[in-house]
Amino acid sequence: MQEFNGKTAFITGGASGIGFGIAKTFARQGMNIVIGDVQDDRLKHAEGLLKEITNNIFSVNVDVTDREALHAVSDKIKSVFGPLNVLCNNAGRTGGGKVLDTPEDRWRHVEEVNFWGPINGIKVFLPDMLESGQSGHIVNTSSFSGIHGHGNQSAYGASKFALVGLSEFLRNDLAGTPISVSVLCPHVVDTPVIGALKERVNPKVREMIEAMAVSADVVGQQVLSAIENDEFYIFCDGTDTRKMLEERCETMLAAMERQFPRGSEDE
Ligand SMILES: NC(=O)c1ccc[n+]([C@@H]2O[C@H](COP(=O)([O-])OP(=O)(O)OC[C@H]3O[C@@H](n4cnc5c(N)ncnc54)[C@H](O)[C@@H]3O)[C@@H](O)[C@H]2O)c1
Image (cartoon, rainbow, N blue to C red):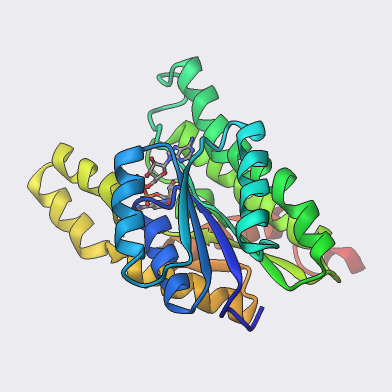
């Protein structure tokens, strides 16, 4: 997708952090912006700030786990701005802990928001995006925890791995259509979630987090450029994450090599 001016974007979890960073970037491109979130105070505040950039914006209180409510948002967007061009399935919640220590209800709620939320978004908005015949893009916010299993983030990490897989299959499904797909895999972004985490850790870890964190505005720019260049993976930094990615790929390739050594096929 190359043209942004006058096009329409819907960003879930758009009232805060990464979603808000994306909304600001899109607004500066002349896009019509719709932000959805479950927190009214955040929505009002974000809408006010976005109105300093554009008048073509509205906000909705919508929970991504509620597919019917998303249908109502879709109808409203169509009546106000016309066809949707960019869908950012960005809303997410944390929920870590070791597998056995994570309560059943937390497992289910984390998967409901982080995995089923994007499925709901896709099911509700994609048919009309295809029907419109216009160029479009879907950006699913996963995490670097959806690429590399580090720490004890069972429910959260599993939901984000699933979202990377969903995004890959969806991109395959949509090959040959004017709609494409990217998956956003940030490691540490300076948002309220990370702010709350910093309060809970010791000063040394806090310092480490601060050194790693990138800003939500930078992530907004990275998302815009990935849509423009049709990049599938959107990584937000290459310092700490490159080593982890190499380690994961090397572990897989080493297993493949042990089990099926190169050249063994010819023997
Ligand atoms: N901040 C990071 O370092 C980081 C790293 C990797 C991935 N992420 C992912 O980025 C996304 C945004 O996170 P953030 O750090 O900007 O957090 P944030 O808390 O600043 O923003 C998330 C927003 O989503 C909203 N939300 C939560 N549940 C919702 C629901 N069911 N329906 C609609 N809205 C809902 C929240 O009210 C909040 O305003 C999440 O999917 C998160 O997992 C963040």
